[in-house]
Length: 480
Ligand SMILES: [Zn+2]
Ligand SMILES: [Zn+2]
Image 1 (cartoon, rainbow, N blue to C red):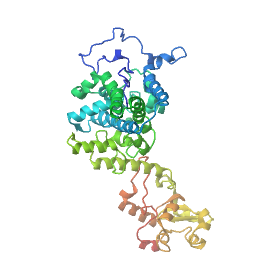
Image 2: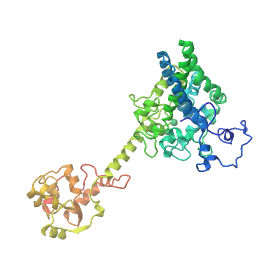
Image 3: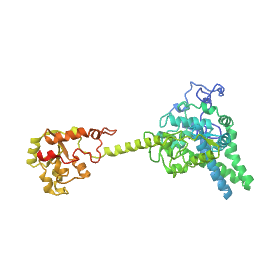
Image 4: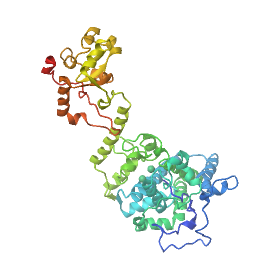
């Protein structure tokens, strides 16, 4: 979620790459690094060894993301926490978090709604206070993340490990040439984005540390508490929370809309990330201003955007049609159903069964094999005779005969479960004979039902549509 320039304006990307020709770099940004040599291999192109490992580490980011918070933690030991400062730190946590989720993410990276100038200025300011890079940098990476999810071009691919997607991609140096290209020309046309990018260092120091200190200092005289709690430690928490969208939201939860990529939906991730935890939905419908579509799901980012729209500060809130959303959900359900179905024993498919002559069938049954023919299909019920709920004698009376009518109400109207069970005992199909002809005709009339197959090519046998099920007792059965 954060960019390669996560802290204090000094980027994780070596500045020499900033001016490479790309969608985001224009000729107005000449190469400012005189030492830049495009032929020299990037450190990430070299394997990590005992001699060079420290060169692979982005020490500045390690200091900014982990070092400063550690110092803040130590300082908090000597700094009493006043309740006003605690409340302010929590409020400012939500503001700066919303700057990332409602501003950087849903407004600028995805254009899921439009915002009036005062709201854009507010979001650019508090988003800067989260210390996760400029809007321009952040959105560029985030668009690459959506376009190249789970591939090597994804800046924070979870396929490289949970820790990598959370923080590893920032503490280890990255080759910016690896990250997928994206178009951010629209962002270059937003003066708020351009201004924030140009003055990023000032924005980050003022909104990250000075502003929260000023509020606590002028407000209730707690300068040090404001600096430590609403400044440093609040930055740490808001960073870690929003980093979870890249790690946790690609790792924990279910995939109700599509399971071909890693994004997942989970309430815990949503709680941590101000509602960005419905990430499977988000990757399927990224231009929707909502991440949670059910009213009871926790998405304060969505609620804020909605309130702003009522205040006239936001408009053009984009929503996917529920018809499209439901289609995705049904397709995914179908896929799961097919997977479940394929694990069950539905009996040998009819076209794979050997063809048996009627005389052979009768002969084998006479010789003691427990064979019973129903609707032209021969079943070996030898091991089931003793378990037959209707008793041994009834099932035995059908052996070696055409038991279609008996099974379908002539003697007993067998249940759907019985037809399913019978299908697991099938061993052959009878050639010719009246019953088979009848069955074949029934199949022709019912053909669209019998030939539906799932993704794996297995026939879908619906309740009441088993081949052994004959809707009405056939007159010919008694004549056969
Ligand atoms: Zn994602
Ligand atoms: Zn996104």
